[in-house]
Image (cartoon, rainbow, N blue to C red):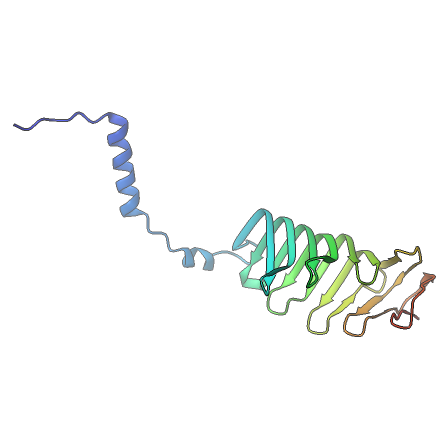
Amino acid sequence: MTRAVKVPFMLRYSLLVLSLLSTACSLDYQELAEDLDENTPAVEMLGVQLVSVENDREHSRVEAERLADFDKIYKRTISGGIFTEYDDQGEISAQGEADLISIDTRTDNAVLEGNIRFHSVRDKATVTAEYLEWTDSDRLLSGNPTGEVLLEKEDGTTIRGNDFSADFPSRTFRFAGRSSGIWTGTTEESGDSE
């Protein structure tokens, strides 16, 4: 003897919808990504934390209100970014922040804009600006010719000026434009105010 089982309407309807979706929905995500215009991010994340690990230790951490990748134009933007770098002992070696960071994903060159603040624990110094550019291959940080950059040391000495550049390998900085202030240093430190 066979017995009929009464299946509730909502269950039948849900099963029908699921079966239609599973047979009719075969999205080609690669095709969708290729159809995006260059101003539409391929990936967008909100409230994100990126952690870089080297030799089983946290090397750096980036926290961002928004991160977006624009694959077609090789660009990554970080809005409301906070950056922390750690030394080999796990201690903070540098911290920074900016309203907007735009990175060329081919070269790792970057443009930083708005409320930029970068503090080096090793140098006991802070850089503050509204606009800076990072050239990764040369490890060079530079400001625009008319934009003001402020350097402050923990001992209270400061210097501010225009057309700033800092060469990280040689640990030197300079202002090619107008500058003012006093910078004290040791023979291991170098500051050139031209």
